[in-house]
Length: 278
Length: 285
Image 1 (cartoon, rainbow over the protein chains, first blue to last red):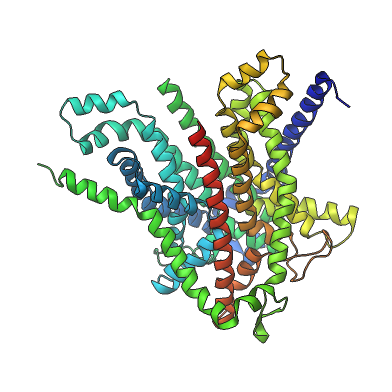
Image 2 (cartoon, one colour):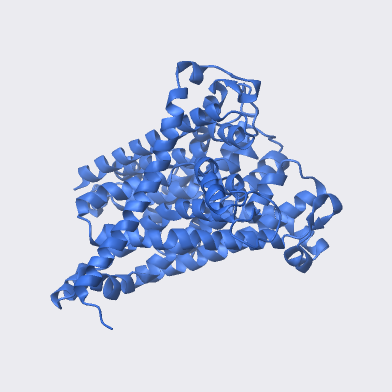
């Protein structure tokens, strides 16, 4: 039997629209649920005092330090590598077999699960290079993890710089590198920064790759060779070992707020970038 | 005066361009060199198809974990793929562009929520719900599938939307000019034209589901057994690595790296398929 197109149309709107609304509701519920339970726990004292009794009481101060240091180290290492790679791919070479291999490698790296990064970071940085469970090992592991994101977003930002800019620069007698330095990178900067911020967001929330490389010490680190515990790892330990539901909610809320803040500023920057373009 | 010549700059840039691929090779090299000797020593067949996982007795069969990983991933696909593709179609074809430009970033923002948070929601909200309504321990194959299904939604939606929007306007106009409704246009024209991109989004979501660790550890229950019902507690390959890595030594640790090798190969295969599918779309365009 053939159903009249008007009814299939109505049915499709209902099903597809329903699926969309359900998706949005689930995702919003997650944020609201965590914030509702966690926000009452957060206060200045919670953020600035040390955990007591394994995290049963007290605050999360040392984990804030870990959460700032690890992503910071990761972007310091990955940003120059990522930008140089994207400059090379978009300005210094044509599409060849080599660039195809580089792109495929980047895509593969982006798809590798964080537990594999954890295993690799543990056997390579912690054991083979002898860095131990440390900020250095964790930061390097995260750097490898976020490299593909930075390469991709930088490449897109560089490609978005109008061709005429390059032509004008070359016609003035500038070399390729001068054009990259004075024309392309300044114009692509907001897009590149967006990629960096998205990577920071991912690093902040990362657990599996960090727990095996940076350890979970609650002491305040005094050098990059000290172990540290990030907020995400702290939250995982609190929640999984059932140490304190209240502090787990508080940590989760702080975690979500930090990640959302970093990502929202990334989007804000990207929109400004696009607005300026058109 | 110039510090480095143009040629020098080009060489440096070229060297850094290999950073990602060298990192990938380095990862493969170290995981494989730690895991492969174990597979040779223990026997691939015994490792993959024996159900006996008792590290203290020197028994390392990961079959239950393989089955669990497959079921959990399949479950996540059943939950996430239809919802995600339906959402992508609705947002790109029915909703005004201005609204979509708000909703799409919002959904992508949700991809940034750490996986431990999803796991926690699974423990606090979903598992009790399943325990009270369907019985069983709550922390189960079913909970893990649902949580993973939700986690892959942003990936599926975002990549699907990109490929749907890449369908040329003229296709839609041609279809509407023939008197087709929006739904007829969607399932006869749009879905066909953007098929490879939609498939790629689902495969990438699958890669994410199979590799997810922390959320699964929290909600799947983690007992090593071949599940007989969706309400059974299961342990996935990733969970097995993460749970035992902290205390494993010697052969046991090598067995965990060997599990990593298997996982690594599966992920690379999935990503290759997805990247071929995406490239096919580009070529078509």
